[in-house]
Length: 143
Image 1 (cartoon, rainbow, N blue to C red):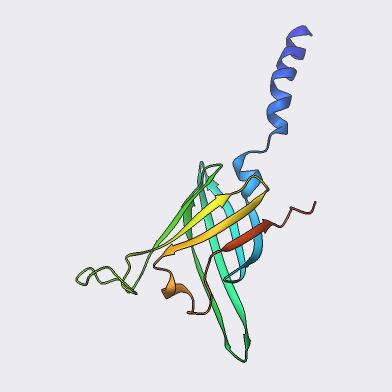
Image 2 (cartoon, one colour; image 1 turned 90 degrees about the vertical axis):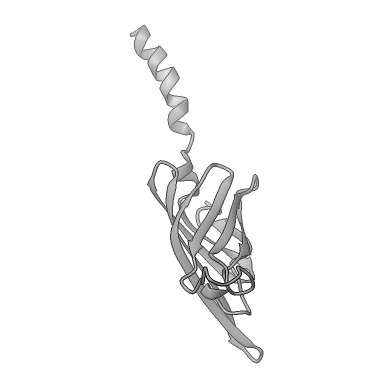
């Protein structure tokens, strides 16, 4: 009986701590360069499927929408999401619209929010009036 108590004391605290997958997996939404939504699905180890969408509603000055998806490696602090641009021409200088990758930095903040920062090369995936940079809250944040 004493061995069981020692084992239970060692295991129970581990069960109470959420894993990275449980903590960050799911639907995120917020504001930035448009209304931004992000969906994270744990695949295995530190690999996640990711889908990011941005929308600026149509108005007198125009509108914008876009999206991108793929896989990203995440730590408890975040990670960088890269997608190779289909129109990239390696024969031309990498500049302007000719970027090899769309890069988006993901940062999990201490206050429970997720910051997305579009680094470079993502215009191919959205219009000029919106982007993937913003601050998002997890759908379970209000629970």
